[in-house]
Image 1 (cartoon, rainbow, N blue to C red):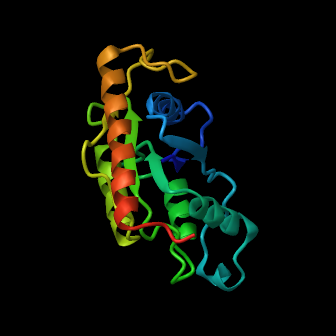
Image 2: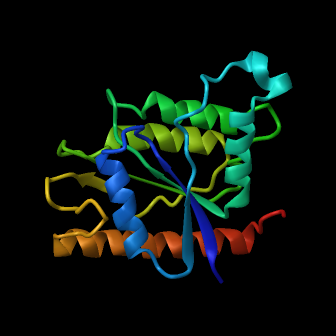
Length: 189
């Protein structure tokens, strides 16, 4: 069975190393996973006052999440946390109260950074947020990728064999996780 994965790029930059990482992940994913980017760059800042009259950008985000079977977060770390744009998107998707788009949606988190600890702190914070949003999370393998120039080409080719093997394993495990979660918690369509 094929599953559709909506993926979030935490950085708004078109030249983001995490955007490039997402291309590598898609290339290395099992055939059972299909991918659709869920864009976040055009969202206004979340404001509770708008819950009664949700803006079109917020509705489009929620509809995109609801269309997919699972979500993958590919995010950098900004000041030991997730980027504000990604937090903003999660706030829109989880509101108004009682309409949380992440509820029971299988998820995984990965990220790349030039630093030696990859995106470990941002990922931990994101996991806490996703836990609150009742999104079942793939907890292992964890993936804190130290970005080294040349390890990924612009189109997602991976030049380092051990990195390619690790990322392929991560995506295979994610595919199995999505299948297990949706077997136990089938999607309401």
